[in-house]
Image 1 (cartoon, rainbow, N blue to C red):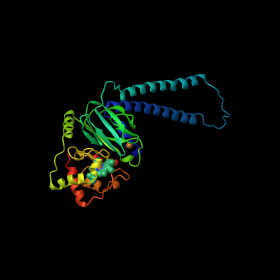
Image 2 (image 1 turned 90 degrees about the vertical axis):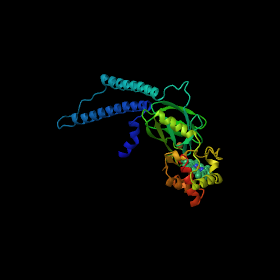
Image 3 (image 1 turned 30 degrees about the horizontal axis):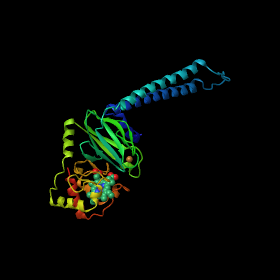
Image 4 (image 1 turned 135 degrees about the vertical axis):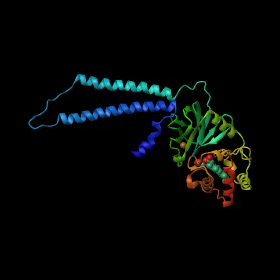
Length: 315
Ligand SMILES: [Cu+2]
């Protein structure tokens, strides 16, 4: 029960008009089902008690067919279904308003097992979708390998990410806050650790965040970080990861690390982003996400320290 409530809670706590429309339909069908359940329970117990065997009563009268009853139990459910149908159309229109003439505000691309987030002005980040609160945004959903599914229960509906067939959906958050999302289509071994956060900010904070992400990261601020920057280019990191403003400009197999130091988590929600966890991740990615596509590069302790200092400085 406790676990079920935990799983269900976000859908019972919508934080956008799109999630509210789903929530509304959920409540209607839940109460309807609860009412029918209560009615059936009542009738069962009523029949058990009212018509129970009593000594000396003999065989009860046989009734075959009752037109009024049959009309009632045909018309009643029919009306309920018509009501549910209308409520469903209403909720569909609410979660999925027309997107004609609207351009996607950002693109999210599902990878095994992380999320790439692209903004129109060239900003690329990972596992974290920043949006301005109080606005609605059309997002474009793509997949780089297999089918994934984008779902932030408190903010909107679920939408598949299908290779070669981009989808679009509205998302928004009425209030600033951090909202949890996850992949909702089984996509392989680390599916469970394919999580992300939607960070809804005040429009001013959002604009500040976006312009900070559009800048080049600060230069290494210590000798150790300087060494880390060299290691990054010399080891194979640059084949898979991009850091804007450096020679590592084309890696796309792994998350863009230009501003990795400013992110909340590492490994799509697997670890909180702090120097200790960064070092751990680099030491042995497979310890935290067995089967993930970042190889263990058998880094020496000195390399680990240097890379950690460098990457955590990429704010
Ligand atoms: Cu997935």
